[in-house]
Amino acid sequence: MLLVHVVLQGETDPDDGAEFSHLATDSGAEVLAFLSVQRDRPDPATFLGRGKVAELAEQVSDLSVDLVLFDRVLSPVQERNLERALQCRVVDRVGLILDIFARRAHTHEGKLQVELAQLTRLRTRLIRGWTHLERQRGGIGLRGPGETQLETDRRLIGERIRSLRERLVKVAAHRATQRRARQRAPLPTVALVGYTNAGKSSLFNALTESSSYAADRLFATLDPAIRRLQIAGHEAILLADTVGFLRDLPTDLIAAFRATLEEVNQAQLLLHVVDGSAPDRDAQIAAVDAVLTEIGADEIPRLLVLNKVDLTGDAPGNVYEGSGNLMAVRVSARSGAGIPELLRAMTQRVGRSMLRAELTLTPEEGALRARLHRVASIVEESFDDQGMAHLIFDIDDLTWRRMRAQMHSSGCQAMDAPPTIPADG
Image 1 (tube, rainbow, N blue to C red):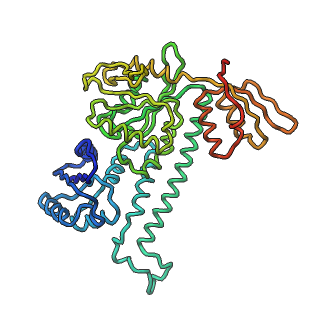
Image 2 (cartoon, helix red, strand yellow):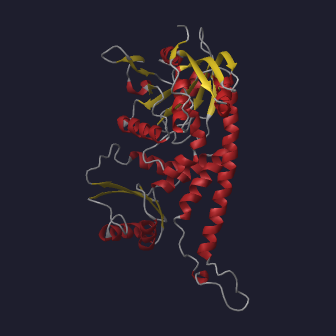
Image 3 (spheres, rainbow, N blue to C red):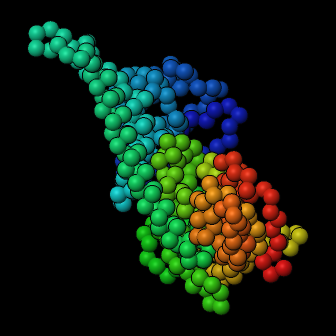
C-alpha cells in the first residue's frame, strides 16, 4: 500500500507522520511508499488537487499499488473521486482506525461496538455500484415496490444498525447492573486513561499483578478490565483498564464505545498514563484531554503518570510543582520503578472526603431516595403525614457533587436547599 500524509497551512505536525505509519503497519499491510504533501487548503473534489492526484496516480501505477491510505478524514465524494482517478481502493484515517479496531475486538460487546461504527460510516458512503440494478424495478415479473438496489442496501444497513443499538442497550444495562453491584461495596474506582500504546495495560498488570494482554501496538486493549487492588494499610480500590485514545478519534467510534467509557465517567480518580519517551507527548496529552471533555469526564480528578522512565533516563518518583503540590509520578511499568510512590499517591487522592447532608423528598422522588440508599450511608430517616421523607446521610464529596449535577440537569430542586457539612463535624 501507499501512504499519503497531508499537512495543511498553519497546522503543526508533531510526529511527521510517524503515528500514521505505525497505524498502517499495525493494520497488517506492506507499506511500499510514503508521500508527504503540503497544501494551503483541502480541494473539495479530491483533497489533493488535480496535479497532485495525477502525480499520485503515476506512482500508484509504477508500484502496482492496490491500496492508498490517507492520513485525513475524506468525504464520501473525495474518496469516490480518488478511487476513480487512482484506479485502486482508497481508505482514509477513520476507515483505517475502524479496521484496526475490528481486528482487536475480542468480546461480544467490542465486536458489536465496532460493527455499529463501521455501518454508521458505511451508510453515508453507499454508491450506485450495481449499474444493472440502478433503475426502478418494473416490467414483466419485476413489478414491485419500486425500490432501487441503493435504497435496499440503505434499508438493510439501517435495520442492522437499529438491531445493533438495541443489543448494545442490553449490554449497557448489564454493565450498569454490575456497576451498581460494585457501588454497593464502598470501594473507590480508579481508571487508567491515556493515549494508545502509552503503557496502560502494562501498568495495570504491574499494579494488580494480573496478566491482561499488553503489547507494543496501537489499541492492544479494546475491552475494559477491572481488578480489585489491595494496598497495604489502606482500603482496597477497584482499578479499571480502558481503551486508548487517539488524535482525531472518530466521533462514531466514541459514541459506539460510550458504554465502555462509562467506567471512566464513574471513577473517583483518573490515572492519565503518558508515554514519557514520546516526542509529541504534549500533543498526546491534549488529545486525551479533548476526548475526556467529549465524554463528560473532564471534571474528575486526575493524576499524571509519566511512564517508560527506563527509556527516558529520568529518575522515578514524584514530580512536584513550584508550590509543592504533586504534579505527576514517574514510573516504569516494565521494571516496577516508581510503583510504590504511585500507590501512595493513589491512596492519598482517593481518600474520600465524607459529607453529612439532609434532604426532604416528596413521595414522587422515590427514585432519588432509593439511589441514596444505594450510594450513601443513611444516618436517620423519617416520614411525615404527607409522605415526605426526611433523610440525614453521609456521602463522599465526589458522589454528592455528581448527584447534584445530574439532579439539576433533570430539573430536581431537592438538591438545592440543604447544606452539607463534614461528616465528622
